Length: 215
Image (cartoon, rainbow, N blue to C red; front, side):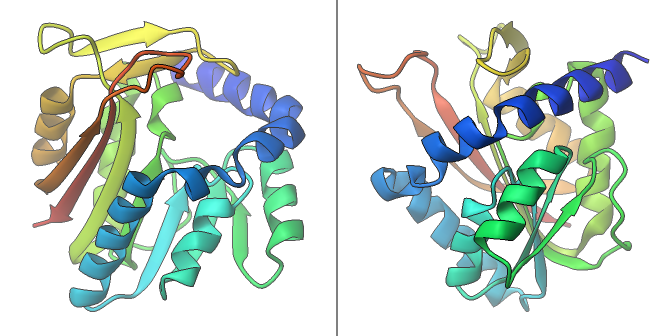
């Protein structure tokens, strides 16, 4: 299967890059006030809806999971890369981190008040994304919230575009197209943030955060 091959390739690539990735990105939120603001809004929405557990899917070395825990959420991380999970467990032994894949989560139906998918869907081939979004919807409780981050395409005429990510092949999405896919899976958009690229950014792509609520 194409999706299986892509997952294996991505997992192996992140295993190889785990230490360097953690060194580069563990402090990334410190210089990203807009990202912190969106994560804060996500945490408030989850809390206002009754809270519950929150899964950081594609958690990498665990720094964002730890940030969510610092905001008062009962957060845990899941990543396909065993090397990333090992780093996360060492850095934050008080938190839970599991090896797992987004298209087949080992989480009960309706068990979560929130799901964070921060640039974790970019390595999912477009035909495989509906299955992933279906899992997000399945594990969320009614009224639960999803915050999904991704890179935008060059315009609405491009639903998806591939690009050469530093670790593995990745995909950009039209914000409106992805919001439509969320709606098709019972996840209604609440808000979105679109950040323009900075001059020093290596890739001049818009960065998008979509906040959605399970109907």
